[in-house]
Image (cartoon, rainbow, N blue to C red; front, side):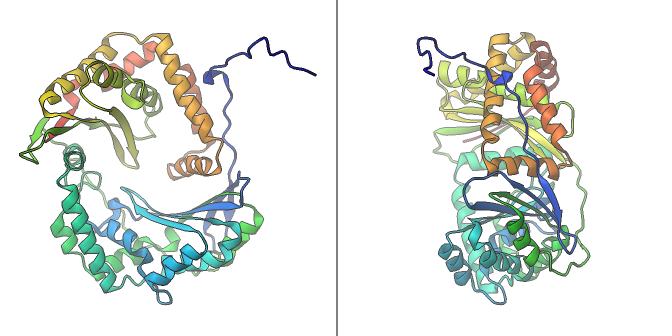
Length: 427
């Protein structure tokens, strides 16, 4: 049957579609370790994440978490650093290790057929890394060199300062790297953190891609046979130490011609009922290229190449920060316009047309995420680590679809109070 091409097909907004998060399976390995997995791929590729409570929150000494994560591939009792990297290259695999504020994540990307060869090596890295002294010396030297270079950049210093001012320099979310802290690291510090926080008793494992019973069996054959010892992780407590001074101007480079602007406030995490609707508000305000901040400060005023507002949720709190860079001569004008846009959002209801554009942007991005196995796995990983299930996802979709201009204004008045924000400018 021939199609009638004289009439264009109907155009549908993203808000009209239904969104369903594909389910995830939970497997308990022979030794009781949890493995979450989903089969959502068409290529013979898998991603496996091992998540440990080994972020900055758990440090007994500053800089330990990043150092251990950076040194996990530096050698085991059986493999040298060179052998580990050569094996990954030989199998065309990637192994990424990073420590964040709360968790450390070890991620393997590989073809399915190479799992039997690579999983035993990953197991050794997680249970038998030796953290050789000479590798630690190299890491410290490189980390200090990188830090000294970064400290010349106003953007880097501004990011350090806004977090420290919001949370406090002794708080894990506000703590930043210092040269003397890196120099003070010892192998004993790193081994103590590694043995405690990378204990398999603490791990949560996630696998996605073209994954099925064969891949689950591979995981069980290696990680399900491990002897599990009791966890010794200490979960410390910290108090916020937000700066009482709201305006900060820092001259980092006497010859600087650009200023890094950060305007931020503390903000609830995903468990707060305002978090999800505020994702919509933040997107409208400064979360995408068509946002109000971008339209005013970049497109209209020409003060910057780009300006964004981000909401960052952590396990024990979060922040909302506007970030941009501009010429030193227009820094104060740019800040003035940021507050102007806050006031406008508080005092005037957004139009249905503008709000629909934002809804379609958010839901369109969500639709794209649900098309790939690794992004689906990332969605589930975030839900599970935060203690949620698919109901949280479904509720968010409904919030994105149904939030009204009046609700936007109520939230704006609650969270865009100028007195709650801290300003940092680093030149």
